[in-house]
Image (cartoon, rainbow, N blue to C red; front, side, top):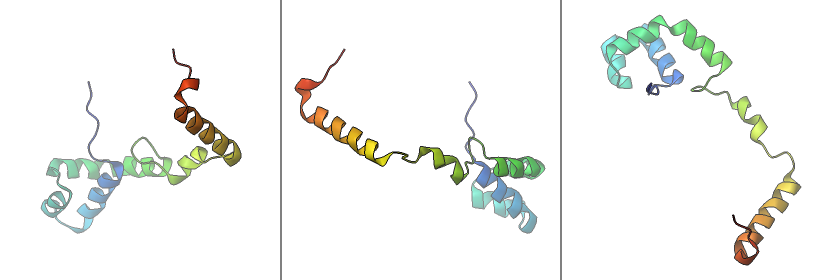
Length: 96
């Protein structure tokens, strides 16, 4: 089973950018990673930048959450009231 990556794209991009202005030893202590990780991030900087623009599992654009907004607030309130009423009056619950 593959392990899930611990470092997100944001951290990787930070490391790749920080490498340009500071020594690797300083960047590794700052981010808490091994120096080989910083070298690898520098090598894959273009791919990370592309993922940042497109968005992926680990770096999600805020516009991706637009679909989660409530579209019908009146119906949402009615549903919440119904669920609250059912929970209060457990005798009306139908269970399997």
